Image 1 (cartoon, rainbow, N blue to C red):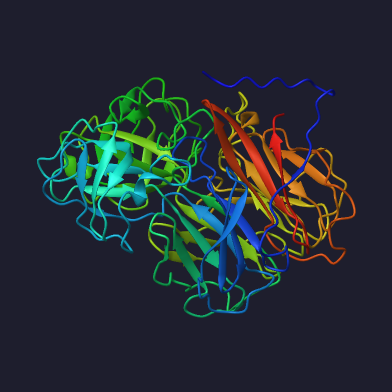
Image 2: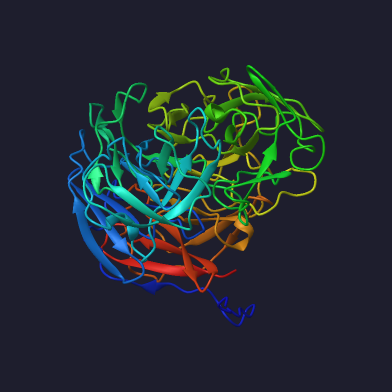
Length: 526
């Protein structure tokens, strides 16, 4: 049964708790990240990018740290180094013959050999989630997700799953291990190996990712966020996207939309309910993914970015590229985050956008902001809101980006134009305290209706939270005084993770103190 937590306003107050001493202090460039999913599929660790040669991991269940591996990053570690977690960037490929509803035989090799049953425990006794797409000719035309309960060893293991699939995957059907990767960016002169990925499930660094279109020198400070397809509003299941439609998939466990029309480069939504009340271009630059098509199985799993769409009943979504295989009428689909990493830095205006699944950086996907960033710049999304206001003044497409060097807030609406739209110097309530070097923030999409991002300002003990629905800044639990170093250093020193107990989900937020080896957490109960 669910765990009961009783919170009494002004009697109970949020407080910080000291945890195990981290192996690396909060010096320049040291950054934290974690998986922001709010269900049992989330990876329950905090990752610390400590130096170009050290990636550490913290276990919040057992309060312990460990060294993971040497990422061997190119460049010079320091201000500008950053990390971010992407749950969709896990191993993927095709399955071989011999599968059934509880057994999956991997054909496309994993990035590294795994040990026996290694994939059946991601750190909390629960296995990684795997997605199977029956997209071969004559296949099921279905997408289903389930948990790994066992595996043989090697790079092409046979995997046992539960609950059982409703179909036996055919040879050539696709798998996606929803285990994720830690994406690492190092500061200094750009070179092969400045941008890399640590594969969580296989515990290995992948081959160097592309660095084309990144700045020639990464430095000063980075703010970096992830718009992953598995990140969704609070109360929705990762894999359902933003809208509750008339259809279901994954054996009826996931909601989805049902197409009422299909063409080579478009898809038409529902005439009633679901997406029938979307505003004009409300989900421009988001992603459509085909999750079921029993008439044309080859169409399943296709992802396309939305370039524009109409409003109201039977909205027509125009896509950035034609379908490789045009889906059938009545195909099922979801509208999701677009699988991008967004980054700002180097005292510039450029928005650097990384395509997670395509491995490519762009400086033109989203427009440059109107003003350069400064020390203390930080950013966070709003995709986790449990609900928008009735008039949709607050939207899932908004990215809140504090400029640094002062109090100014710039807001990027990724759906506001073909390349998004910036509102520079946007007004907000509670404006006052200046953001300088060592400011750090983290968004909490896992509790409190997904409304808050938390910030620790400068090298002080001051903590605030920002309401992404109402644009109000307010004070929150302050840090113990006298611990932070007075010398402010840049780095993403906050992260958050879902604490799941007896089906009750609350958020724990973690902070690595500026310049010293102290590490704390607090529960976000209000």
